[in-house]
Image 1 (cartoon, rainbow, N blue to C red):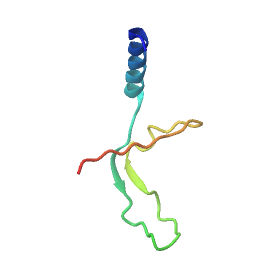
Image 2 (cartoon, rainbow, N blue to C red; image 1 turned 135 degrees about the vertical axis):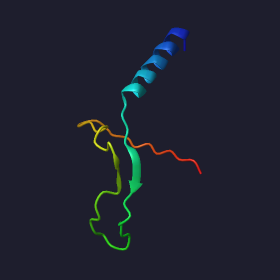
Image 3 (cartoon, helix red, strand yellow; image 1 turned 45 degrees about the horizontal axis):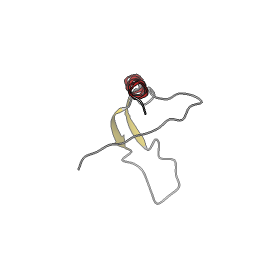
Length: 67
């Protein structure tokens, strides 16, 4: 790949990450019951959960943690 194509790809990827929004303070639902098939509410809750949704497009979840 040439220098010009690499720079264009890098600029495109950087612009995409700047426009992306994400949820914060994610927490697993403490009331999940794995022994039954009941509706226990949302699996994950957090702040700004509706910011990244786009109708008609795939929505990805990326989780990162350090142990």
